[in-house]
Image (cartoon, rainbow, N blue to C red; front, side, top):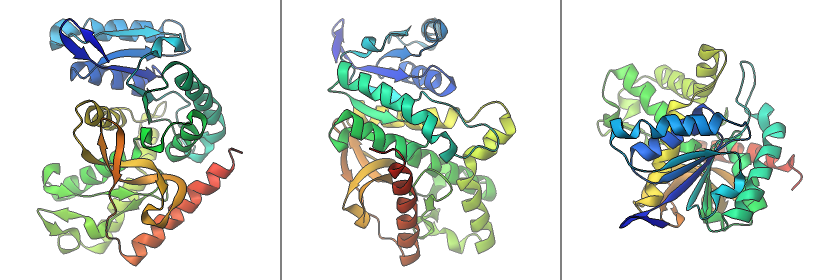
Length: 315
């Protein structure tokens, strides 16, 4: 933190100036949350995008600073570092296909975070999300409360959106939560899903619910297939910034997040999506929901899959 005039200002660094990273940067300054450093290895891209966003300030009425750079050392004194850098999925590519390539990218970035911003909080966005978050935790040596990933909120938002579309009601009328790994084995918690306060099972037939669950699990792939040459970035960036905001404003908001578990839900030494209270120090508390036996089994199966992929990293 630093002072801008008489105002205490936070600093957030964003690794990756692609669509997700640029949107994260833009949303942060437009919400007047922090000054932003946008970093990428490609010369000119972070500088150009940052300058473009900065020039929107007089229109959008924000005075937060944003600048682009190719130098990792510019993240010095960051309060939060958001990692979006990595390869995006292409049609036909699973999240797991990305693992080997993105692991080397995330490892290098995390080493720079450890060197230049050792007191920061890391928010991971790069896929495969759960594995990359675990990797960043191991490489950084940070407290597990200070390293977490974005995907749970994104998956939950997709499920809420699909339910609201199916029933033609505002998303605010839907309560839902998605646990587990960010991928095919995510766990939409139907027992906790409500519409206007009523269990979703009393509102929609099983086949409709199953279709929504399947569409949620394939939410990212559906967008990839539609875009042809890219992947989702509006909803992912919005989800990441919600986490940034909960830290900076110390909101203590309960957000489905990819966190390192230490016995919660009967799981240890794995990173997986669960509801977590997020405040100024990162993960303040993991919220343990009452799950059905089937949901517990699905969560364990998802965790086992993440552990298997973590094992491939050779940490």
